[in-house]
Length: 113
Length: 114
Image 1 (cartoon, rainbow over the protein chains, first blue to last red):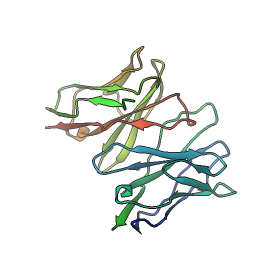
Image 2: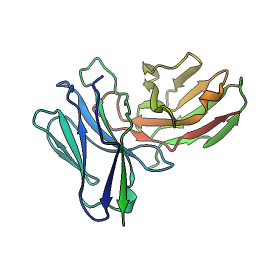
Image 3: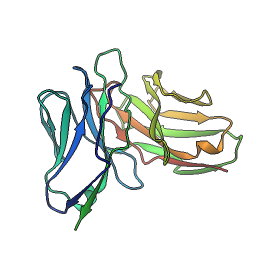
């Protein structure tokens, strides 16, 4: 399975935008890019996923590089509730594969008031 | 809409015993996956079920098993418990199986083996 690389930690100020980077240089053409986050003492929470085009939903935006070797999760206005560990995950979409998620260590996001 | 429900929330077992954990997925979701989370290893995939069939299995010993029922509810069983099995066990459900769907996780069952 293709691997992702994320910074161990990032800090942000409340109400400012946050850009969380993820490198996946060995991504294949059929790999989907998923983002999940885990708040303290909770199970992971789905944030967003995409294949090639940028994606937006009520929680965040996902910007995917043209060569797909990197992506950025964008939180438009960070709140204290966004403090969590964010995981960037690739899932294979080649039909013969599975949808299980392989979690790395993720990026721990701290949000300062 | 009810989320993914896992029972029990907390469990204490003795080494050598066996344990069964339960997961009720979101209504309409047919895929259920199980994960183990420990401070040392992080989140690790155990297995995934879709329409009562195990589609994929992670790298865990045979003491870990699971099943899915016709109503999509799932159980996982761990036999001959070891101290190292102490972990948070998370269940996730999805509309379908495969990478095209997002997964919704439950809050987990905290298992402590003493």
